[in-house]
Amino acid sequence: MHWADFAAKTLAQRGSKHIIASGITPSGEFHIGHLREILTGDMITRACKDAGLEAEFVFIVDTADPLRKVYPFLSEEYSKYIGCPLAKIPAPDENGKPSNGERNYAEHFLDPFLKALEQIDVRPRIIDNYKSYESGKFAEKSRIACEKHNEIRDIIETISGRELAEDWFPFNPYGHDGSLDRVTVTGFEWPYVYWVQDGVEGKSDLNKAEGKLPWRIDWPAKWGWVGVTCEPFGKDHGAAGGSYATGKEISKLFGDNPPHPLVYEWISLKGQGAMSSSTGNTIGPLEALELVPPQVLRYLIASTKPKKAITFDAGMSLVELADEFERLASRDIDAEMQNDDLSRRQKVALEDAEGALRMSRIGDKTESIVSFRHLSMLAQVKSDEEIITSYGSNLRDRLDRMKNWIQGPYFPEELRIKVLDAINPNADKDITMRLHSYLSECEWDAKSIGDSISLCFRESEISPRDGYKALYNAILGVDKGPRLAPILSELDRERVLTLLG
RNA sequence: GGGCCUGUAGCUUAGUCAGGUAGAGCGAUGGACUCUUAAUCCAUCGGUCGCGGGUUCGAACCCCGUCAGGCCCGCCA
Image (cartoon, rainbow, N blue to C red; front, side, top):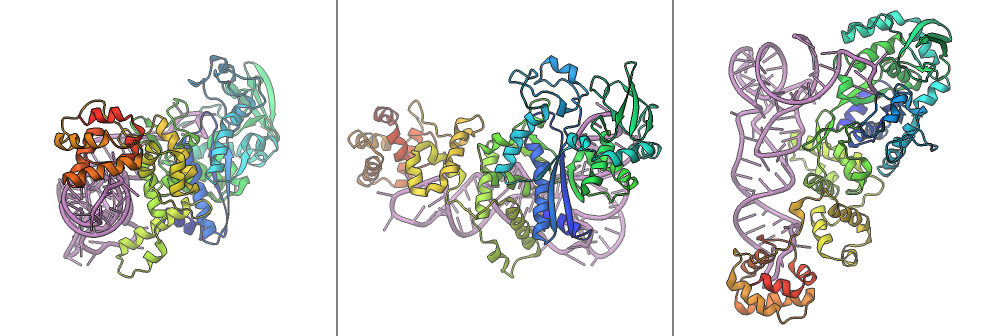
């Protein structure tokens, strides 16, 4: 059974109505790693619906989280915003300086991500955390947290095994400068938390966004008022003593039923370690979508069990992934399932494949007749019109993406068609000399070139196999390759003749 | 120090929860297609299941130990 279906089955035992949640802090550029968070949630939601459950997917954007530090992509001017909620900070401009524009910091990074999600057919209900504090959604949980601060302290200290500071309090007010830093809570009397920052005293109303719950409490509080029944999260939250472990207990303290967890591994970039918004070591979803169709990105997540680490590579691995998806999409899985000779293992594999495909599909079942590998070759040697004419206009979209890929930095060298610059001594001289004379006389278009090559082989009694091998070696330096005539017709006749010796 | 996750063919991996002859894709190799799609089709090769013990008629799977990598136990999402 596919992992998403398995999760749905587990949820079915809990009830028939579900809210699956994902949460991300928009502290920097979104990347493929964040896509795993979102897609994992989206796929569980899809699986729940397939299983006949009522399910809604929500994306909680942690806009109330403070700016932690001045990231490398920000200018020093941001230091004055450290500790302030991302929703109240101006977006950086192209130089990393605070802009005067309309958009805040959180929106600046969130908007492009939401556009990518739309392409990928993920349409969650968006919950803005800061606005939720503003409208009092957190008030009730905040009240309980403040009233039961000793129990909460006990839960965190016992489960995480760490000691909290003497002046720790389960609610962080924003001080007079709007920052959470250097603020000490001095008292609580509903609905106010009293505090002092740099000698300045003040109070924060729990009904408004005048402070926020610390992460380990904020999370279970959201579970409660949103009604979350399932949430996937990264392995960092999942470890023993981590925020899920404490959140689960705090959730019970709030009188709620903690959501079903699903821990997923991280995505790293090939050869560069974990993806990280703060170091700029990222590939964004939009960037990836310029190379492959959205189904392939969905398939990347769908075909890998959540606990498996993914090493993302926008080169050859992505070509293989895309082709694997196309092959799978063109199979008739239902028919294959009818085969009674299948072993238990083969059956399981088939079920997983069916599930991964179901989780990856967007809209109609449009399969393609051309593999990515093949398309990469066609795109290098033929004009768009020729390709569209032979394969149909529904290839347009993929062709455009392929062209981006070829022109960009990620296109694998092994797929690049490289014409030699000098005579290849490994090519059969005898054969290439004969081709030389035939090709110096024919018309210089693809058809004539092809005909001349055939004619040459026939009249010289050279087997096509040996003949093409020699020709490929002379032009491209390899034993076999794509259709040569169209490539030759794109080159100067003189250059070709030179290579033939 | 304590805990969690991962380790299976050259590569990516299924199978571990419910123990029963190790499955697949890619790549590689060979062949077919009487002028070559990096196409397609067929076949073949390829695995001490990280390592060592134990339980069992039988272990990739359960138990103990061990090695390697990642992560958490810092209001850090």
